[in-house]
Image (tube, rainbow, N blue to C red; front, side):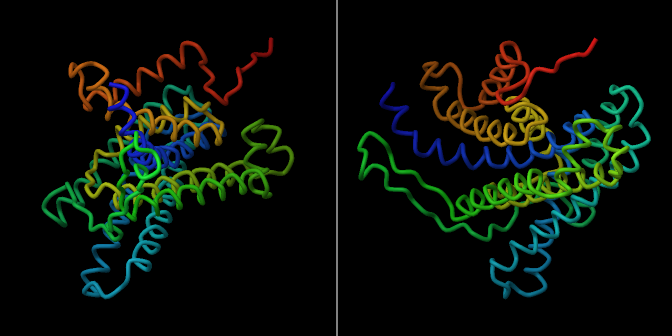
Length: 327
């Protein structure tokens, strides 16, 4: 049994890091908004889904117009930029219309509103996609689908070789660049300092001449743009999208944010990678560990069971800090 599990380790790590990078990008949007507003924006997963559809539409539309003449290194950045901008603008619009009027209301009202916005985005995207294509399930043209292999067995005979697409490598590189850039922005720039100030104390920040509304709008824009960016990478990596991919992936990204410590950006990155690796490990090895009683379809149960365990023993997450109530 151990030998069988060891053989799959290289492939599990690559698949887990790839999926975890997507979770981490989406989890960053959750944790940024929560850090400032203490709002769980459950519409964020559907903003991710919107970005996937926008990026796919850009790629397919451009390919049909140019008859496939444009190279992939032009199409992919165009799709990423367009999807990020539209997703960011969507996030700002949602904050302005749905969340800002409820800013001083009980959190439950804002939470229910976020769920309503989530369903609204799903139905809008489904309606537009069925109207234009006749089917809401879309198969995306993969721009980088050349197969690569990592010859691990030549060095360590206990492992099998790992196989992945060129897009897998691009996704990991893009995710690392985005995470480093965001960390630099938040911790080294003027706007990042303003965001951290608003997250710490909104009222005091407003007294220090910080425009709180602009900072919140910027936070929604960046978080939503990251969601759209991740949506395009997801569509290119996995090839099929529908209006409901944001729901379960959003839940898992939220789980990743909680694992790392909701409100902590580096924790969200760590939580996303950890969740992706654990999910792929369980998908590959649950059947072996349970003698066939459970298969790969139970990987979600495994992932959410981990969340329950963490919440029981360390409710603030791996990188979070316990909240001290002043009396």
